[in-house]
Length: 395
Ligand code: NAD
Ligand code: GLY
Image 1 (cartoon, rainbow, N blue to C red):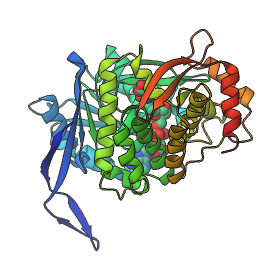
Image 2 (cartoon, rainbow, N blue to C red):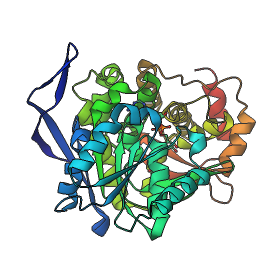
Image 3 (cartoon, helix red, strand yellow):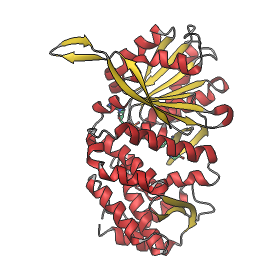
Image 4 (cartoon, rainbow, N blue to C red):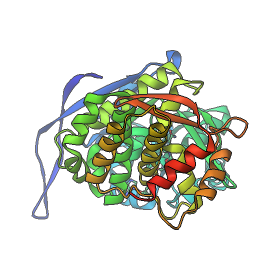
């Protein structure tokens, strides 16, 4: 993470119906994802989307947009709030914006949606210089990235995440894809973006549950990788949830930096990268069992992190004090962390063995050895999983 640069911007401030140009400075934090020829920058700065076109030109080292098509994949609500600023700034920088507005929702993270995007790109006869720009949450980012990876064997791809979850997790690291039948993210690729531009001010329009969903991933990074960061997050967890915390930008940037460090060591998840899946085994099972309608992704991960901590305790790997610290933080942030009585442990256990992370039916868990330190690849006997889930009923 480079030291905070300060960038001059001229934000428009709404005042009693009028719009005033007020010079103001916004701190900027940059994180580099080091992946040899696939390296890229993540820039965190409030209101960066108003200068999106110029930022892209500067960061990709282009003289200007050169008339390149910039296909912007976006949901209707996000288009309503931010679309016009984005298209104007792309035009100003010399790009030709092509908005592609897609219905929101996990159930649209499909090959059918990808096909719809391919069709639009085909009908517009776009060439290989076309940029794919994902503006939105993880669903848009994952589908847009999949299209970018596959259309004409690969187009340049830029992530502009607008949910907290996408800002701290899904926009970084290059996992792109779609769901297939009952398998989440079953079809996909590793395809890194050229640039990630994060505008924390877009979080102001995000519903509370979506913010909390992203917060679960921030808590996860502290728990698996950095005890000091965990404590900073824990100290201001309510401020982070309400977006009033002065630590917000730093928490986003530190989360991205942790992910960048892990991905730089193990881009294709042959080992270390699996620690990023802490809480995801049970979390994914809960999302799947409830048809993706009940839990937001981060809410399911919060429950799953507690399951993993309890499993670690049962095995003597996770100290009980670590579980209670995690439970305290998640409870302060008002996450429901108990295992709902309506979910059968048998169903969860059967789904776990179908998880992509299982090998020959054996479920592998990421477990905490200490606060700030996780290890992947623990094969856990089924009776231990059942015992831990049974304990979680009481939470
Ligand atoms: P999402 O993409 O479904 O977005 C949630 C909702 O928020 C949508 O309705 C969206 O239109 C709306 N929205 C987005 N930005 C907004 C804003 N600024 N203001 C108001 N509304 C806004 O959900 P998500 O939680 O961002 O992403 C979940 C997806 O991310 C899942 O499909 C998950 O598998 C994926 N994911 C991918 C990775 C990865 O590494 N690729 C990592 C984690 C999660
Ligand atoms: N979200 C886990 C990963 O990107 O590896």
